[in-house]
Image (cartoon, rainbow, N blue to C red; front, side, top):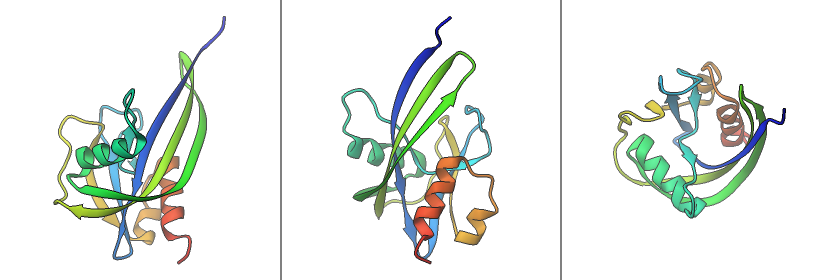
Length: 140
């Protein structure tokens, strides 16, 4: 029997302020509940990836950001119970424009918080967040 194969394109933001990275904690609606990730998520059909990262960042953190540049494109093959998933994730360096940190209600994340490199490395991170921490602090 052939397994269903899917591709998911997503956009994530890498925000570092005063030597601290912003991470989001996955809520109980997600498989990896309680683990930390980068703010961002799936790109809607027809949506430009730049618009997606700004939208997702606002939904998950309450912050309005401006995209500065692409810092990495990540690709991962995942075997799920009923299908195979090819996750393609564009990671953008973003700059905070305005807003205050707020918690997403009823979404895929339930907390956003800044962490130093040392603090982030003590968290339970999804692979994308581990990559984000590495990218954020690679020159330190």
